[in-house]
Image (cartoon, rainbow, N blue to C red; front, side, top):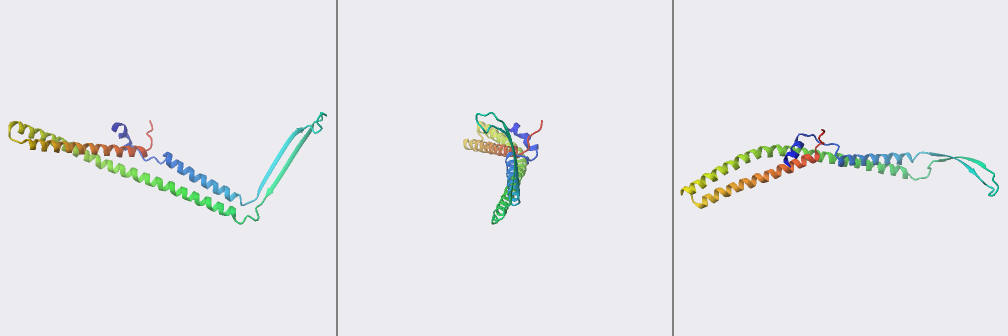
Length: 194
């Protein structure tokens, strides 16, 4: 697992993550809705055309080609500012959506940077912890040899073994914390391009 996640520490922040892309598209949709609402304040013109072959006399097979052309114009005069308020509301929603997207990107970028910094510190601490475990193992072996030779008590052996076990547990916790930080970095890093 660690080998698979280790490459994430070298990758850059993924500003095109699905969550961030979805937030950007939401903001864009809200801006389009605001533009649509603003367009509703002006006049609208609707043109239509139709052509058909009709048989108006039923049993008499007389064909009439009917062509229709239509035009309609609309200009809202007495709307009471409804379209203006709707456009302002949609614009406010778009601004809020953009702010949410920017805040989400900032939070994720900050969490990603903090995870990278924490990983660097944990990696250094892991090497120190590894040396500590080796030292505790050597001490436990020396104390046990002393016990076999009759120079140390059973409690001293147990104390040395407990200290070794404690160092191993701390090393395991450190490994879990490193894996957690690597997973977080992997989650917010750009995909690796082969």
